[in-house]
Amino acid sequence: MENQDINEENINKQEENTTQTEATAQENVTETPTPEELLAVEKDRYIRLYAEFENYKKRTSKEKMEFFQYANQDMMISMLGILDDFERALKEIAKNGNEADLQGVELIYNKFKNKLTEKGLKTMEVKAGDSFNVDFHEAITQIPAPSEDLKGKIVDVIETGYTLNDKVIRFAKVVTGN
Image 1 (cartoon, one colour):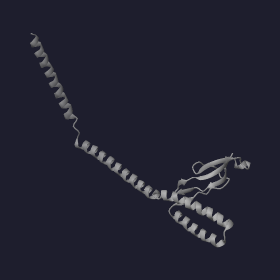
Image 2 (tube, one colour; image 1 turned 120 degrees about the vertical axis):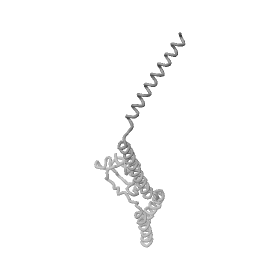
Image 3 (tube, one colour; image 1 turned 180 degrees about the vertical axis):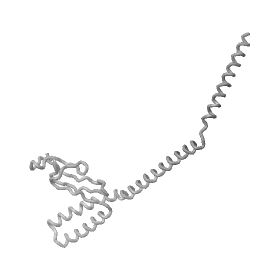
Image 4 (tube, helix red, strand yellow; image 1 turned 90 degrees about the vertical axis):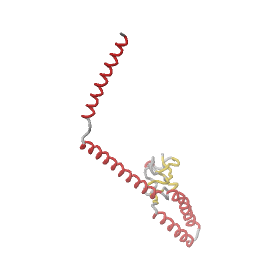
């Protein structure tokens, strides 16, 4: 008796599974996408892939342009020390030297500076009395302001700042008033 009950249960379970499988099969048949739907899905996938590839091309092109624009940045930074030395030499020769020496050094200095300018180097124009801007200036020290209008402003410029293609490569070192 017990075996017969177990057999009947197994048969009932098999019948239920068969009915569920048939129902699932009918659902799958009705859910099969039409060729138009398949075409729309593939077209959407193609458009997304094409847009992604276009974005990749633009991004790599931009990166390549930036690389060429700033490839000589390290060389330019190393040349700034030489440019500073030229400026100091010109000041000293103007004080103590003769006119011929001054003209010769000025000629070399101008030629050197023009070549660097051709490659994108620009001098920051900073004067005493300008407002202090942390994006372009580096405050070396603060001193009591000589006048009331110089409080929080630049009192003296210690070292010239430079930009390379509108990117700051050396901040102008300044003294501010407080």
